[in-house]
Amino acid sequence: MMKIPFKDLSVLDQSKKRKLLHSVDQVLSHGRIILGPEVISLEQKIATMCNQKYAVGVNSGTDALYMALRSINITQGDEVITTPLSWIATVNAIVLCGAKPVFADIKDDLNINPKRIPDLINKNTKAILPVHFTGNMCQMDKILKCAQENDIYVVEDAAQAFGAKYNNQIAGSFGIVNSFSLNPMKNLCGYGEAGIVVTNDKNLNEKLLSLRYAGTVNKEDCIFPGLNGRIDTIQAAMIMVELEYFDEKIKRIREISRYYTNRLKTIVSCPLEDDNSFHTYYSYTIVTDHREELIHYLNNNGIETKIQHPILMPYHSAYKERYQDCNIPNAERMVSKILCLPNHEKMSDIEVEYVASKVEHFYR
Ligand SMILES: *Cc1c(COP(=O)(O)O)cnc(C)c1O
Image (tube, rainbow, N blue to C red):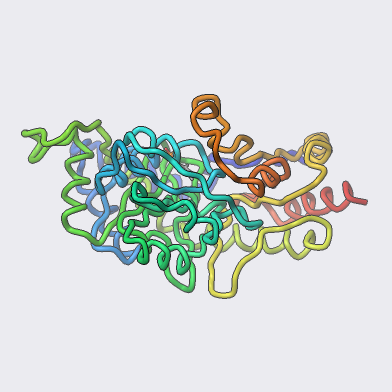
């Protein structure tokens, strides 16, 4: 029986491993362990790739989102409209700013439904926070139009969507300030925790630089309370190496994902890709009415699956007493049916075929 892990974070490519080790070696030699030159290179590179003027490297995607929201002064009394289906960091970031998350229902593509947003806007609404769930972009034209009409901000939680596109426009270039996670699970990854914020706005960039280091200016005077969210130079150096392999990795992940779709689309609900969009398939998430049995069956055949994410954000223990008033029937329906199949770039064609045929077999 084959053994197919959901992800495989080991570095098996020896030439890539040497490059990664060399990048660490260089940092150890120059000794600028904190905010060294590799951080600047990474920030410039990612800003350029995202078509933005500035990028600020931080120590997690959670920090990136929290600092993005802080930079536009999201605070007590404000409301931020977001999706109920995301990793809990999304809502934690809003709540830790002191603001209230307001949940708009999702569409069958698992992303926020722009049609549900206008009814949730009131005088306290400060921003819309769309999450490009699974690496599939939200309908950004509709979201931006709604935000413009109501004079509120858009901030993208693009943690799962580095490199994804909507109408041929890159993730991270739609909102006023946008965040990415570069943790080891994400498509563009470090070898430890990391994240990055991008923006076109000079003032927001300066604010982010302060927020990254205790709310200080020139590392001296603290102008507002802040945490310490600096990215490690070593992470930046290793992510620079990852970037060299990124296109190739996404190409392989897309190849695997599209193969699954071709094989499975008549038997389960598979992720869709719009004509002018570029889905990066951070996860390959199917929607199935027989989830528990399918998980069990695949597991018995050596295939590891995951549910990302099994609990809707408003229903986590920390929040369920507070946010009882949300109207999210589609999210409630979908969250009990979603299942992620392994689609990582290290899978061989034979393994990919094996997963597809086991899913087919289950349905037969
Ligand atoms: C991963 C993730 C985050 C948080 O990123 P970390 O680097 O793990 O802190 C935030 N939002 C979403 C949608 C994520 O998937």
